[in-house]
Image 1 (cartoon, chains in turn cyan, orange, purple):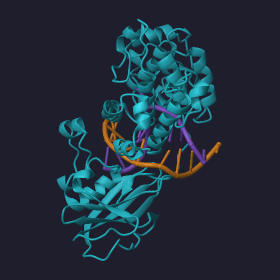
Image 2 (spheres, helix red, strand yellow; image 1 turned 120 degrees about the horizontal axis):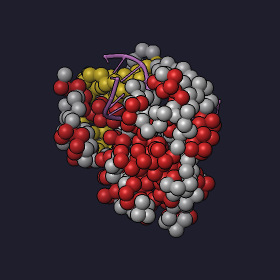
Image 3 (cartoon, rainbow, N blue to C red; image 1 turned 90 degrees about the vertical axis):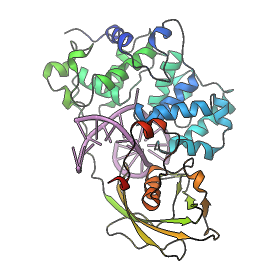
Image 4 (cartoon, rainbow, N blue to C red; image 1 turned 120 degrees about the vertical axis):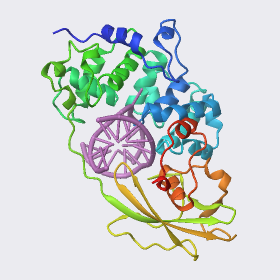
Length: 370
DNA sequence: GAGGCGTGGTT
DNA sequence: TAACCAAGCCT
């Protein structure tokens, strides 16, 4: 049984590295080229619990709009929130802005090059600090994300369930991490987990570490890592009121900064509660008609919204609300669940206009396509 | 430590 | 198709 070697993985990475917009490929890193820490940080924050496919267009949009850290630090917060709309986990956008300001203010506009310095910044935890240090500065930090957890749990056939086994995985990852090319090694681990050592049906025949992999030898790689059973996801019900002015402007309000969809826009509505659909008072009296139902699944609950719609004349907005011009809807900080609500009520796409590839290459069905 | 926090792709 | 889950962080 050979020990897993960093060299075997790096040799594989030299041939099979994914080409990604935020990445410096291994042949360029071999010449001493390191990526811009700003781009590494931006991509890593966007990639937290988010797929590469979802991140790509957002990363390019952000980079085109705010090419440098000072540019992002100087940007209006609401612009950043609006640009983040649709990507989810909106506290990341708030922390992104706060982090940019902190680096500009406290670090002369340059990211710290140590794990400790990075981890002290908003929105940068143990994973992201290690990833930036390794990828942007070639610090031999142990970079442990969900991919690495899976690879290492299988490599050493770790039976202890997550998250209890995390410290053991971190220790083993540190043992594997080489002093030479730690940035490439970290990216290679994640590429291996994303393309070969996948959650289901891992392609062990193509794996550079198939020989030393204990789980492959036992034949149960697909069952690792173990996880503790997760709690059941409840369903909550609510009402959403879409008031549409004659010029197509929509009545919206901004959610509180903290908590679910913090800082994002929504249409007025009542509380979201488990049990029977609640009665909710409309923002003002009008001829409210039922426009259908919208379903949306959040991390910890499923939501069913009854959508009410009214076409109304010009009038001042109720307290806490404002009229959003029809032309501005696409560029605003509307989370996906609210885009669904607006589409259900208006039979008109409320999607972001900048999602060229998504719209052109893979148009999503709306409830009106059924 | 455990729960809150989005979304869309995959199986 | 409904469940699963993806480069986690914060409190």
